[in-house]
Length: 113
Length: 114
Image 1 (cartoon, rainbow over the protein chains, first blue to last red):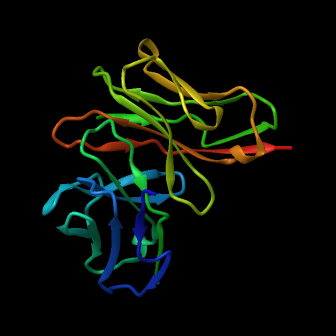
Image 2: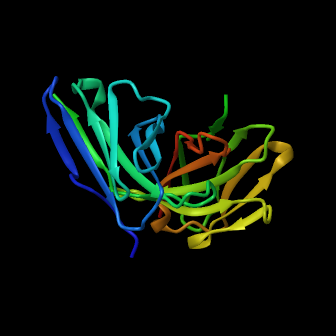
C-alpha cells in the first residue's frame, strides 16, 4: 500500500528553536510538497520539489527552508521557530504529471510556545 | 492570480438529503480540478478528479462533480448523505506550467445530522 510517513504527529517547540519536519514516501514519486493547514485558510503551499535537489517556493515560503537529498525524503526546516508558525503541516507526494493525485501524510501538529 | 473559491465554510445536511458543495475557479485556461476529503485526524485523500475526458466525474463513496466551463464551476454532489460523509472537503486546481503546483480552496466542513 502507498505510504507517506511524517515523522511526528505532535511536536512542541520553543520560540527561536530550529525545527525539522521529516517526510518519507515509498512510491518513488518525483514530486513532493509541504503545505500548512490553518482553520479558515485551507492548505497553503510552502515549498515543493519536483525532483531530487530541486525545489521551488510556494505561496508562503518565508521562515522556512527545505531539503531533498534523496528521492524518498523531503524535509521542512523552520530556521528559527516563531509562534505564528504554530500549525498543522502536511506532506504530500505524487508522480510527475500534474493530473496525478497527491498522496498525503497524516500531518504534524506543531505548537511553538 | 489563479485561485479557487469554495462557497460556504460550513454546510449541514440531514442524513439522506442531497449534498451540494460549491467550487469555482478563476482561469481562462482549462484546468485540472480535484476534490479531496479529510476525515478527522487524517490526511487528505482524493475523492475525484477532472482531466477533460468527461464533464461529469464520478468518485468514491457515491460522490460526483460536474465541470461547467461557462460557469467556471466544479461543484461536488451526493444524492443521499450518510453519517460517515461528515468531513472537510477541499476543492483544488492545477494549471500546469513550470510551477506545476496545486492550489487548494479554503475547505468546506460538512456536518450530517441524524
